[in-house]
Length: 122
Image (tube, one colour):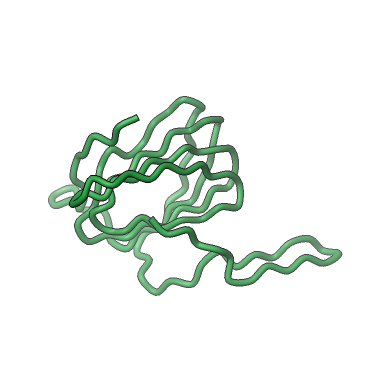
């Protein structure tokens, strides 16, 4: 998992402009709402990258390196962005009602999804 800092952030009388990320790999852009207490994920991808941008709320995320078992736990709030790499199992738990944008590098294919179940521990 990589934290993604804004590539630019400017504030003036009109408000805020923040450049979230510069990527050349996005294939799907998705909007997600999760109720407080909801858990999503418990999987990893073999080829796909995912960028998450938190719009609202608080999310507790757990990442597990599938090969080594190394675990990383983080909390993310409005304005935070991060990338999940291939072979990083992940789980996102909504601490509060939360909304986020997800950009993924491959199109979801029901016949051959790049999504592999993995129990991500609490």
